[in-house]
Length: 460
Length: 178
Image (cartoon, rainbow over all chains, first blue to last red):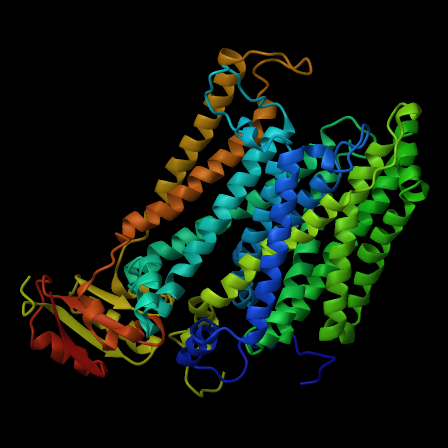
């Protein structure tokens, strides 16, 4: 088959390398069962150091107060909110892959969904840290929940910030449950392959006594389908509600109806870029190339191209509406965004998010590992800048020119953000070492041999 | 516990097709108390075994309805009864603003219903099962396909059932002891 023109009537095989059911288990379980490689120990040490950096910064914040951050009077949201939206957005690709592509019967998702869902959970944890600590007095973060208290005080349910608390906590809980349900049959695989007592006990407990009975599979598959059907509107609602944090306020540059779809597209865009970045590394290090194939990477790059173009459209449409509305404040906010003191951030965002992903129109680039690795990182830098541009540029020149100010972060904010990658990577590395990175039972289910009407060696 | 009491037969098969055919044969022979085990769900097995559709959906709908109504009740009670404060000039019961949380709690409780309902229907966790004592059964989560026939089944006979399973291509038959 030519590399450039594929025959669309022939399905690209999802598992390469002539695997049998048994060799799939062997290949996926190998990283879990072998001793941790040197690179793993080295990266884990780096990740834990970064995590400690984040904890130290949070300690400083709690000890001293939010004054350690560079926030000032008009700019009361800075890297804290940028970090929150950045991380929660990254999480969305995992749910998209696990739920939406499942409903659309996109079978190629099976070898990457476990990986992407893990990314979702750890990214939402990073986002949750930001949400909890940005309130300033973290020891009263429970005020965010409607809990009866001695002050007879209750939360304001009309506030989008309140909606966000419910959206993010529901999202985290459902993602965790979805992930765990998917893991159960594979934990049972690890339990049955275990050679040490420790593994047998721990995987045994978490596998809950799964034994592959068809009556169990029946309820299991139904539960999985329902969770996918619930997660699909959930993931769309979560980033819509995150965008309401901005859009429901009456600030020029935030108060726009395009925000919910634009945030969702951006979230998927950044999340897929993160999946590509992580997958390019992991498939190489764990020799999982026959499951995470070039076909998978190329398909994801196409989604990055599509969502990147949507984001570019949203940038353009925001400007058009700012002009078309005839509202001088709205117009000013956008001209200031592109040509004001933060123009450097705006044009970084535009080039990273709108220009570079367009290279994926070329099949050669879509299928080149180094190119996609670089572009996926550029996209995530761009999406970080998008949140920064939205947050900082809309705030720093408010309605009263006498209060205009420029915001730049302090070293505490920068180190906390760098440290949040430590939290993410620590959990991700633990996941790669102790859990199957690929959904074993699902991959077996999409192999041609799994179809009871498949003819061994027969001609189709 | 008497370890010599036979409670059924365990028969191994080599492929999804073979185990599907075995299930159809057992169903047509009038067996009801039998189970198929496989490393992944096999398409068409529910029909082949003659088992009814999962009732999980009804559990989830019930949980979702509870989530939705309790979210609405909570927001109404807090905003109108317990802490009636006018914000942004909106009415105390401004249901439009309550929609997002109603939705989220509906999804949350439906999710609990789906996961814990599935556990309940499957009687999980069940950390001990007689089959776990079978060495050959270890491969069921990797590449093994099995059928077990329960001795409670009226059609069950230690010899004839084994013969039937062998005649439809089982490659190994064992007795399951309690």
